[in-house]
Length: 379
Image 1 (cartoon, rainbow, N blue to C red):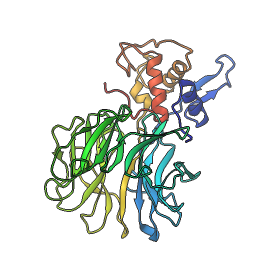
Image 2 (spheres, rainbow, N blue to C red):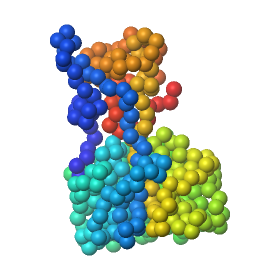
Image 3 (cartoon, one colour):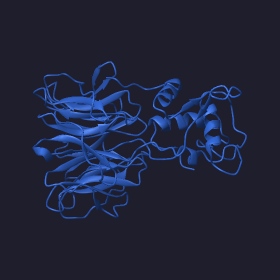
C-alpha cells in the first residue's frame, strides 16, 4: 500500500509540493519566507458514491451540493463502495475486475488504479484508518467473512474470528476502535472492538436489523441504519450505544449514512422518490435534500474527510495587528518549520487550548492541511 503516517517534515514536504506552502526567496533580507496564500481552503466538499448509470457499476464523485457529478472508474466490471484516504488524496474501493472481489486503491482523480489485496477469495468493504497507514476490510479468505487489516507493507492481520458474518468495518476518528456489523447473536447488530481486535462488544442489542455504522468526526456518535421501527431508517446513537435516536422517517429504504467532515451533515441513500439516490440532511435529521437524480441507482456515499476550513480564520490575529492577513500566515509558517518558538500575541491562535500559541498549534495546522485530522479542537 502506498500510504503511511507522516512526520512533520513529511507534512511540510507535501504542503510545499502541492502548493499549500510557497517558499518566497525574492527578498534577500528575508531568506526563505514561507507564504500561505489566502484564501486558503482544504477541500472536504467532495462526495464519492457508487452508481449504475451508463449501464455499469462505477465510482463517481460530486460536489457536496450534488453538482459536478463525474465518473472516476470505467472498467466493465463492478466497482463499488468508495472510501477516501485520511488526506483525501486516494480512494479505496471494491472491484471484481480480476474475477473476484478485491480491494483497489486509486488517486482521487481516478488515475493509478492498483489491486491492493490480490487474493483468490472475496475481499470487500474497505475502511481507511485515520492516520492513513492501514485499511480494514472484510474477507472470506479463511472460510468465513471476517474483519482484517492490511498495512503499507501488505501485511494482513485477522481481527475477528466468529462462525457468523462480520463485515462493514468503520474506524473511530482517533483510530483506537473499529465498529462493524455482525449477525453473531442471531440478527444483525452494531459491534465495536479495539483496533487490535480485542474487546468486541455489542452496541445495539436490538431484535431488529442494525447495520452500516459510521462514526461522527468527533467520535461521540455513531450513525447507522435500522428497521427497528418497521422500515430501514437512519439512526444515531452515542458511541457507547446509548440513546439511539431516529433521524429519518420516510416509510421507505434509507441506509448508508456518511458524516460530513465538520459533523454538521449526514449523507445517505434513499429510494423515497421511486429510485435510489443520494440525499443529505443536517445531523439532527432536519432539511433532507436530494443530491442525485438519475434513473439509475446511486448509493454508498462517502464524504471526503479533509475539512473545508480556512486555517487563517481559525488561527486568528496571531501578530496582534488587528486583522487576519497574510502576515499571520507567514508567522504560522515560521512556527511550522521551527524558526520561531512562540507568537507575540498569545491570546489568539491557541488552537489546542494550551494557554499560548506554540509550535504544537502549528503542527495541528499542518496536520489539518494534509487531512490527517478533520478539524481543529473546538474553541
